[in-house]
Amino acid sequence: MDSKTFVYTTYIRATPEQVWRALTDPALTERYWGVRLESDWTQESPLAWTQAGVTVAGPEQIVLAAVPGRRLAYTWHTFTERWAESVGLGEDVRAAIAAERRSSVTFTIEPLNGQVKLTVTHDFDPAGRVYALCEDGWPTVLSSLKSLLETGEPLPAP
Image (cartoon, rainbow, N blue to C red; front, side):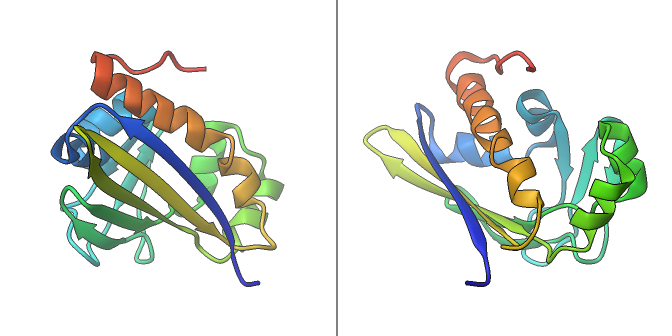
């Protein structure tokens, strides 16, 4: 086995266009996730990730697929020293996760009876530590996304 995969599905009372916008509009990602994602959202375009006041970008941090209202995929962010400091992650952990094979995340958006079925698939290095750092975070992020789209307000930060 050469990967470890996290899969999560949620149902959101929204349109595929609204979900797409929530996944790609930097102001919205920042509201429900605390992460500002910036790109032109076309395949192979660079992706900038801003969290806790630190922007991370790099040549391997790119959009893998972008079909508005249907599918979005990108490589996970680069683990820099500055980013690790800003989120309180020790250098030993940062160095270990930076050495892992870069993970990627895919969002599949499917219309279903007046709502959207959103499936998130995040593929990780099976021997790495990034999976453990992300697996508890995704349900919180996606619940906050759902809350924002259905009520106009994201969940309070934990």
